[in-house]
Image 1 (cartoon, rainbow, N blue to C red):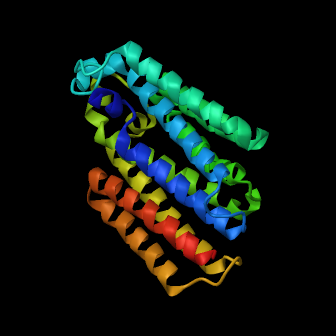
Image 2 (cartoon, rainbow, N blue to C red; image 1 turned 180 degrees about the vertical axis):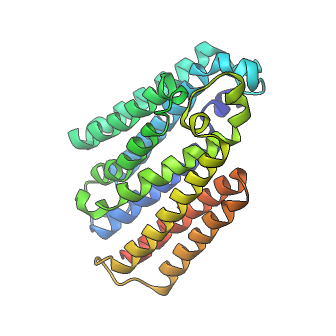
Length: 272
């Protein structure tokens, strides 16, 4: 069982699920559709299914690579088997599909598109210079998917894809830096390898800081409710968390996780 749990990459998966659930809760409350609804629960489950699919399929697709450079991962370590990993991935995809059908065609299509992009990353794009594109696309769709899932106007999150997509792309680059040496040993040609370590770090940090500045501007000019000092303060804390990442990829990665939480809460306060 621990091996199966590790397949889904629990830390980032739980972060995405929790933030998606929080976003859905905020949107439902703002739209007066009731903060705790069946649609919110199904939407959160759909996102969870997509995370299970993505994480398990990633380990299944990378099993030969991991045997060479990351032997402690679930499949090469013997904690689970490739067949079990593939089965978990199929279960995640089936769960997403099953709980998305009652949400209607828009939520179903947006979720399927986001997951299809992630599947393309796992099976092909992760080892190419286009590795960043699924992060831009899948995470850019995520706010729209959640809004459609809980049944609110997509206009409520109209600006979010312009911030979430680039932020996810920066997170991908920061994470790729943590695996830079291992990827170099196996001849990977992902975007980080093509750009080089220094350029990748500068790009990841620069995008993350730019997104933080964009969040600040969005908080100031948002017209759905008056902005508050607390929301701006949280926005500034998130920006500071990202800025301290200048001291290294691991600190940037941790700072981006903290910033994602701060900015989600700040947006909730600012938009009422």
